[in-house]
Length: 114
Length: 113
Image 1 (cartoon, rainbow over the protein chains, first blue to last red):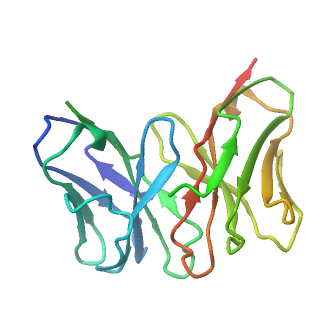
Image 2: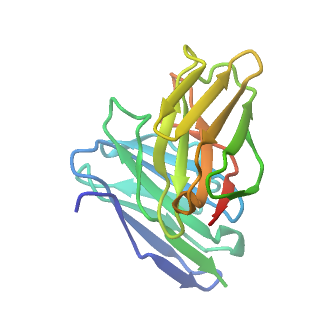
């Protein structure tokens, strides 16, 4: 596809379960970003990938959060032992490496932890 | 983490009116100031952006005004249309951490027909 895609679009899970969120960036975009958007809040930066490596993980809120990227393309954000405060929209974006100011966002995954 | 303050939280404007959304920042290292538009169920999309070497940038009905000394910037939507109804986010980034966009909390704009 032409844009960034994310799956699932919605996820309902029970507290304590693990969840995996997937992002397919725009083809050719070396840079990939994950953000979290809580209700009534702006976007919160989580992690940045340059190719398959993550030079900046500073935004990950706890060690329950992890992310990986394989083949310089698909990325997975994993949340272990989910908590109710993890409920949010998780957005993925991608860009060319030398145009990081121009990020293209996916539609997001809406996570609800019961 | 939020370093950009955005106001108002919500805004209702009549069709044809001017919508104005304001943002303020503290970090003088910020040198890139984009505005994003987000429709329900969609991800944010870059609308317009400005760098501090200019005080104003206009693209169609959308204008960014930038006041470096006051550390403030604003989005003006002229001749607002119902199709402009969306949530708008301002953001800022530094040259060293260009990827780390700091977003405002967002403004929900409703344009009434």
